[in-house]
Image 1 (cartoon, rainbow, N blue to C red):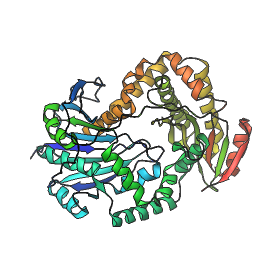
Image 2: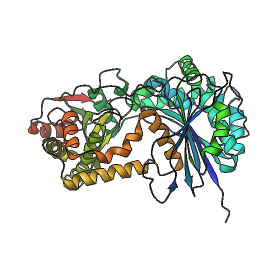
Image 3: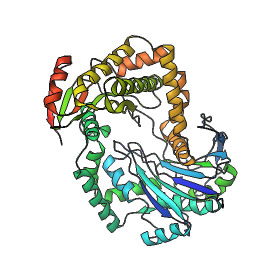
Image 4: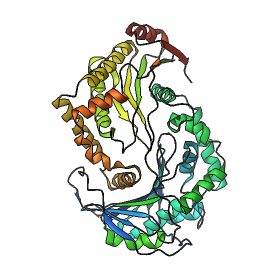
Length: 479
């Protein structure tokens, strides 16, 4: 049996998107016969070296070192964490630039097809030569390009990854193909889950707010974004946007820095990382039924708006949502016969992201499930969590953080996000007290004000909701 040492390299241009959207991933076989040319700019003065971000608990049986950080004179940050005994090396390049969701989506779908140095055919030939692959992603707060290569060609991989991220161009034919694909996505029929989350976003945020947009909303708009807007944004990424390069795997700073520094030190001075800001819009009780006639299933969703990652209430709120995830799962699956079980998520981004609690259920059990969620929220706001519930919620959050670092690829993304969005606070989640959780739940998830969305057959749902006496019910036609 042959054993190959494999290095996985991620360069992510983490465009801090000013809006929402579901991640879009594309994977391709790549290879580096590529040679990245240097960009013009002033020579850098000696960089500053420091150690930051204490190592969060690694997932399982991985020997990882502390994170080392170098800040070059132009502001580009290089973050490296060695993972001994692991055959992969991953690199993520994140860029902190605010961007509308539709622009980010079309850019992400088109990223990696060509650069100022090479056209799409040359890119494909070069990357296939070394058997690499890449994937481009766009989400609420960032977009990145990931590149994976064998460890013995790490230098070529880094060069290709940086080129594809910072020197991308957008050929007319490729843009046209992506526009067609986005229009098909926007025109597709929506399932219960997608419909419910779209409706809840529209209730939680005012029109045109960055997080008002669902994935379908973004696809509709992205198909019509002028190419000039994508080009202008890419120029900002190259010229001034904050850049963070995170490297994780079977390598170290002594090996990585000599490769990265010549490629980025001549870039122009970078802007400072933007601060995390924003307050949650006020909650107002709304009960909306999206009619899906003759559907035997329904989707129940209770919503809220959280805080950004560095907010003082963030640890307590994350714990509260973790607790609600377990309670919703228990009620919806075990007590009231949900098809797939329930849960809760907290989509925190640069600003106050949405909280979703619920899941898909039998249409006959809608009222029971809505009441169960409201009862749990009310109990959590009235008294601190018991020792067992608090311990379970804390453990789930530790597992969640470990999951984010399961592979070198995801770990490098985590470190880049940690730098850009303040994710280091995840390491301190366990410090939230039971009173912190209660106070956060009372502030951001008050049972008497959270909006409620149910998607399904209105004739079967309306009598159940009206019997709960939770407010006037508005019926809308499914999109």
